[in-house]
Image (cartoon, rainbow, N blue to C red; front, side, top):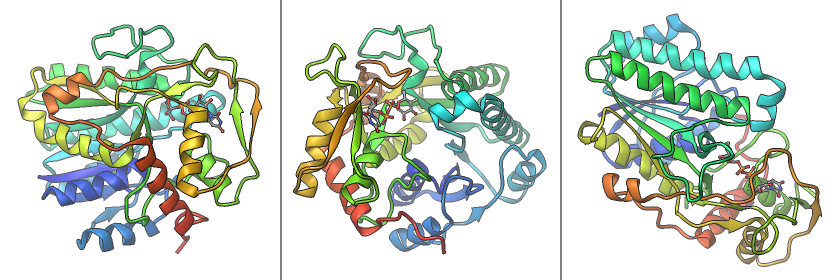
Amino acid sequence: MRVLVSGGAGYIGSHTVLKLIASGHDVVVVDDFSNSKPTVVGRLESLSGTHVPVHSFDLTDVDKTERLFAHEQIDAVVHFAGLKAVGESVTKPIEYYRNNIDSTLSLLAAMQRHGVHRLVFSSSATVYGENAPVPYSEDYEHLSSSSPYGQTKVMIERIMTDVAAASDGLRVALLRYFNPVGAHPSGQIGEDPQGIPNNLMPFIAQVAVGRREKLTVFGDDYPTADGTCERDYLHVEDLAAGHVAALEHLDDMVTPVRAFNLGTGTGTSVLAMLKAFERAVGRELPYEVGPRRAGDLAAFWADPSRANDELGWRAVKTIDDMCADTWRWQSANPQGFPDA
Ligand code: UFG
């Protein structure tokens, strides 16, 4: 298939581009580089040995999106592009709703006009909200999220469901990610957050490489084994493989729109993650315990059985793999991707 990857220069997008090419697909990337560096593209080309065509614009631009579909022969879309910082979305809700919703509508309209009816969407476990029983199951129906970012994921899932119901043949896989971490085993591509990292793994990695003084653990008085929050971390390579599996399964899905949890099914605490990273680096890393972060849930993980059974997909990499690969990337690229 010739696959349009929106946000293909980003963290999960770039790893998925490589997996798609390795599986024999042609890839076209659209990315506005608002939260990624153009230099990632050269690395994708050298790792894959393939030219990766890139269209650099913001998908909220309806005319440019239309022109892209008019000029490129597209068989399927994997839609990653969007704003994704939970905390920032609380202070800039208009920006988040406008960007994430408008870009999706623009994409869906162009797909409809050009008869493209295969879509894989980058959703999140955040759609399960605060009250879903753990492990999270796709059958849970009361989707909601406490942040505007998360609400855009809930809304986009709904929009895609409604558009598919009204369409002639649109098939959509909604992939609900748990906590993606790790990097390509080459150490050439990885997560490169701009500014202070919001997420645990890139923060630990920047402490290890000397860019940050110490990790602050956000609360150790949760009702968990060691008092710190537990999450279902999965390797970005496994996650990327999940996109290829979902794409190739679209035509066989039991319903035209289907949600799939992509996680391991196991929770790991903040302190256990720090210890695993220390093993990868080979030394202790400085940390302090601070107050809880607003909005954090104590513990959640996936029931991944639907993706296991229906997509034939399973997360196979361990926490130690995730830390070793993150460290290889971070130590080889202390400042992330170069500007040019
Ligand atoms: N944490 C720290 N210190 C830090 C950063 C994080 O202790 O400096 C802790 C958090 O409190 C949390 C855990 O590490 O307990 C994981 O935090 P992340 O920010 O890495 O991940 P979250 O589970 O909070 O967020 C992820 C995704 C979001 C998604 C959310 C809910 O990044 O996109 O899961 O599904 F919305």
